[in-house]
Image 1 (cartoon, rainbow, N blue to C red):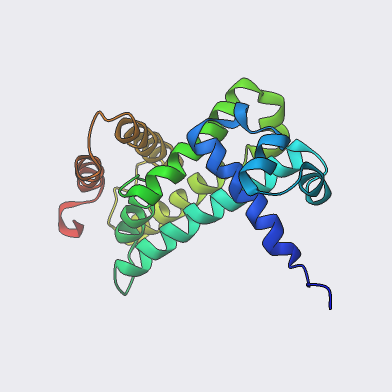
Image 2: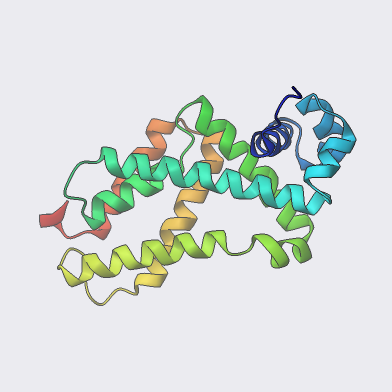
Length: 203
């Protein structure tokens, strides 16, 4: 009998090949032919599952974001119950930091996609511009909940605070990747910022 092909597994193998190239050589090196070679399949097979390079990039980006989301969820669950806005903020943001080999590789790959968005704004506007906005909205919601429970001063703008947290975390990610500081130092900076954001009784 002919061997049954698991199409989703094939798509995953090809997308993961793209992400490996992106994280080591950058997306400029991730031609369809190079992805095929990395995945150990024919170019025709890559084109069968992904008709265009853009389609492959979108799939890879979605999987990368999914990996980051899973990591944040794991951090939040590990923070203990019941979850509080403070513990959720800290767990979600530290989940973005490259604290081990796997997360370091994920963030290097994410940088490759960010570089693509910078060099090809039209592509970013069409496809990849919503992920940071979703994260900011999530943080804004957690900050608003903390204000309602008296943990954060009510006169602060939640959306501005969320934007500042995202910017701070993004800078910390870059500094760890570049070797300016280690992950422990980055986590300390983030804790200190949250300590000043939350009222003393809620730290």
